[in-house]
Structures are given as C-alpha cells and as structure tokens.
Length: 267
Ligand code: SF4
Ligand code: SF4
Image 1 (tube, rainbow, N blue to C red):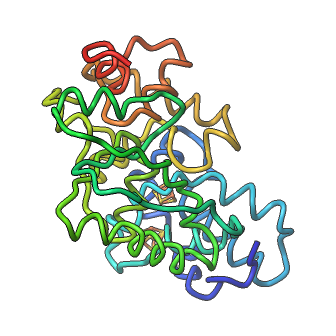
Image 2 (image 1 turned 180 degrees about the vertical axis):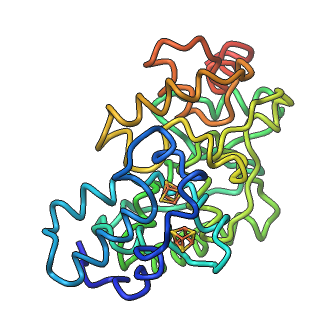
Image 3 (image 1 turned 60 degrees about the horizontal axis):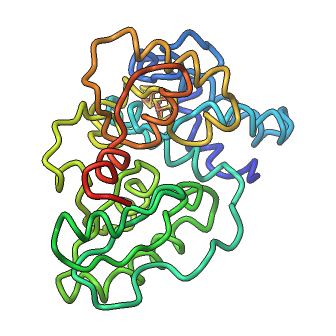
C-alpha cells in the first residue's frame, strides 16, 4: 500500500459531512464504515501514521469503484481515483495485451466460457479472442503506465477498423480508462438489458456488489448489496456477466448474456 498517496488530496472528503453518502451503493447497504467520507478518513489517517496498512486495505476494499461519489460531488473531488491510487499496486500484469491478428472483431473474454466462436457464427465473421483486462490494473501507482500499455496494445487493431466486444464491467472500466472504444455484447445481440452500473455508470448507486475488489474481499457486504439490489424490479438479463454471476450465487433467476449467446449459436 501507499499510505502517503493522496492523503492531502483526500482531506476535503474526510472533512465532508457525508454529502455523497446516499449515492454510494456500499454505504447505502447500511455500512457506515463504507461511506466515502469514512474511506477518505482512513486514507488521511494512514498518511499520518495513525492507521496500519492492513486496516487501510480493509477500508479501501469497501469501495467498488463505481464513481458515484465523484459524479455527485459539487466540488469535483476525485475520491475514486484517490482510493485506487492508495491501493496496492498489482505488480506486473500478464502480457500480451490486445489482439495479434487481423480479424475484424475482437472478443474480450470474461471467464473460461468460450464465446468467440459463437459470436463469429452470429456475425458471420472471424473473431479473435483476447484475455480479460483485470480491473486491479487500475490500482496503485502503475495505473497510468498500464492504461498507456492497454491503449498501445489495441491501437493497431482499432487503426484497421476492428471492433472490440465485451461482456464484463471490469474490462469495460479498463478500456474506458485507457480511452479504447468498445461495444457491449448485449448491443451486438440486440438483447434488451437492464443496464447495470458497469454498462451505464450513471446507475452506479444501484451496484449489486459485484464490482471492484469488494466481492472477493468482503463477500458478506457484497451479498447484502446484492439482496438489496434484488428488492428492486429488474429485467431478467443484466448487462454485466459479473453481476449475473454474483446475483445467481444469491439465488436470483437472472440470465447471463454469454450463456444466451452460446445457447443460441452453440459453443
Ligand atoms: S466526493 Fe465530494 S461529496 Fe463526497 S465526500 Fe468527497 S467532498 Fe464530500
Ligand atoms: S466510488 Fe462508489 S463505492 Fe467507492 S466510495 Fe465512491 S460512491 Fe462509494
């Protein structure tokens, strides 16, 4: 961790009377320790040597990187970026990034399910498959360099007119941060999707807990958020496969866009 990273910049949020608490999906699930103000306070305390790196890490894990606080903030404080910067750097990320061939479509995978061939049959085109882009690449001081590497890796394909398709919000956030355009799989399939916050960041306050490090680090909190999200009427198909997977684990009957493609086109 980088306990001094962003401590001064986080002070306005640490002193703020929790003005953005209501847009934070984690705090809204009833966890006062997860308010943006509380997390900013942890960054400030760690910078002053008043909080251990372990406790700082626990506080940082309570943010799902939804961006809701920064979007709401009337004084434009970049708290999500400060939280990401204060997290541990993931170290070198796996290469290679980006497509190697000349196919007109590029599918960014989400998990072990092979949907590149199915997408190719649907599009009647060849599709190159590349690995998912881990969201934790946006954490730590190496984030800018990693975004530059992602941008450079995809530039040749974009330059020859290739289109990127993806189905998970983690890769979407990385590509957005790197300035790389992409298309959602559900848009290609013309499936009406109840947009999750990864598809539509303006809906960040409704995050079901699947995003960021939270689901792995604090499954109890993520489950509470998921149950809260399920209390609101939703469509059967969610925009992000991470959301669908998370909500299915909670017993919800929701469709997954990759399963739908494979069912329609074959594996
Ligand atoms: S992001 Fe803005 S509204 Fe939220 S805690 Fe920081 S200063 Fe307050
Ligand atoms: S980015 Fe989202 S989850 Fe993180 S503190 Fe801000 S509102 Fe809460």
